[in-house]
Length: 469
Image 1 (cartoon, helix red, strand yellow):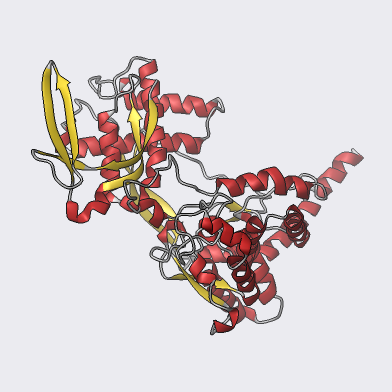
Image 2 (cartoon, one colour):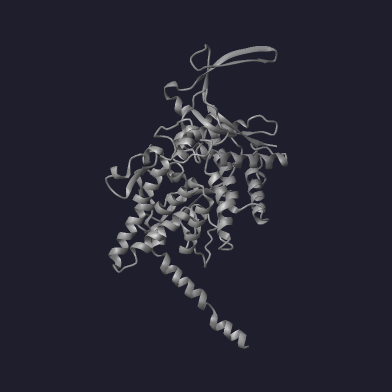
């Protein structure tokens, strides 16, 4: 069965006739003949961009690499070395494709049939649609798998080096118009190219939905739920997870930003900070990750929150954890470390940095799973003691921050001028690219009041008529 194997690090090399610094000897036999040569690191002056940590390989059923799939993944890695993590779902999609083809003894490269519905891409699309219909996978999962398959074939067709020339096309390209709203809130239409084997995902809107669309469906917490959350965290007594929640609630930061905050950002005494709230730079080059590598953005850290983080950074508990880490007390070390000295979430800069050959390589990078498990195993059950059925995800804290801020600044009169001011300030605080996302927060309370009124009165006249009859 096809599988995925993750290399701790993949180094792009070229054949060399003589050994050199960092070269790798290759010595084996082929048909009884001894073959010996060296492989040297490619592009030595830019070695960082020719070595990729946590690189996934798609393996055939016999354990050999699926060469074409691996070459496409390498092509994508070299094109965007900062987003190696995006390769894994693509590799998983290709593994699923190869597993399906092998199960029916179909060849991934056989496009000899004039009947397009007998070509592997069309057969696989039908298979994915049947899985969706049976409820085995979601349509979004099917779309991702087909997206990986299309990406592989596009690369093979466009690359002369790969020598892939199918007799008949794997699909038919189509141009469609996609409607969207620009950053100013105006409706626009963008022309995009799709295929007739792509999986369409219908946009679903639930009429009674209380969530906010902001990089996902987020559900803001009520005041009573926030109070229960804070109380539960205090009772559980894990200061790291408690502070992580406080940062998200009081700044709106996403998980990857909270967990990649650095020690050096909170060493200065509070009295040495010139202005409050403290503006903490985030994004590439700062050590603190942002979604989509947003640049020139800042977290607004209130004085009280800064004081808590500063006190924690200097605490014996935090120092003991840093003692177990590789960076020790370097300002570049993470603020939050596990009890073993490891990061809860390894930043993109650290994942992409080349490690010394003597440094142990991990099979996978930390991406916040410990925090998610703590929430599911401890926090939610603790809160459910007082609020049955309660549940949340860490990202909901971001929506809670946004709504708390709106409630605080929109409580008085001010008309359209105040609305526009609040909209722009919140957009900056939450790093929204589109102001229409910010509008969802500004208008949330009014929308919920209208929704509650609709729920209370919906079809009441007709219900009473039916009851009388």
